[in-house]
Image (cartoon, rainbow, N blue to C red; front, side, top):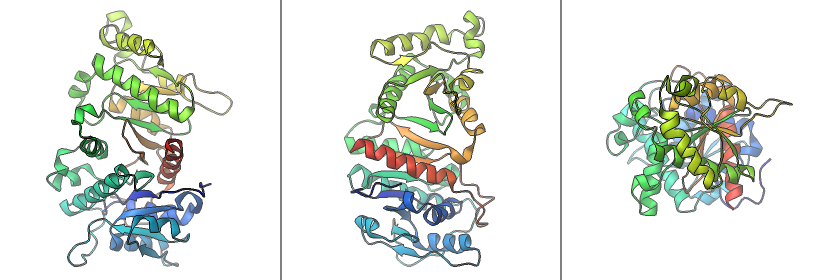
Length: 356
């Protein structure tokens, strides 16, 4: 149920226009009236109108309404899709083809994110929900987007610029969450070799502190953080690696001195099962700190991509997104599932309410 006293709207970026983002957005506005009321889309009107026709499948097409300013979103009636045109071309262009990688699609996706993020940083929207973009298309779009592997790094750069800081002075972390498990990552989008090198004392400590601050606000108490080891069997006393003893455990010790409730490094093949929360059996931890991308994302996604939400911790704005990609193979079919996007909107609304 929405907060009827909501003072600012929530922005949803359309994602890559060649992917499923526009379609799941239309489905969310159709199927989750309470959750999407007061939300609007930052993107391309013609792309959203095409998505509305695809989703209708020969039935009544949901109207797509063009907004002239952000606050009009709060006045829109249900069962329509309010869109603010992120970058109006000199003359209307046809939507990009479904399922095809292109520089134009990457540019449109990037422009939507930049517009919405800057609006959030200026305090014009309560939160930002990002539909999936394609990292290869973002790179094809060229500068400035080719410098960023994905949403997280682009948002970090925009936030740092807004705050007048260097990017490394605005640290962020990715949290993936569903009904059963929360995971925060020490590193995000980089090669495996780079990810191993990123397991440093400073990065682990910073991750623990960001997780503690962010989850304390969400839970209303200090979270129980389970710390995943890097090596099999947590290094087995140094037989399989010494990072646990030399890097991770010292960072945990310093974090504990600052009030963080974190475990010693735990065997990564069992810690996610111990943290999993199920009906009648709460997890041992509120969140797991994983040492690299796939270590943390595989267990979350195995439990169900359709309910997963990506939350960026450490930003001076609320940002969530669905826990899946652009699914080019489904684009244009109308079969894409909007559940994860709806969960992302719900999470964004909750987090925004806690910042008021």
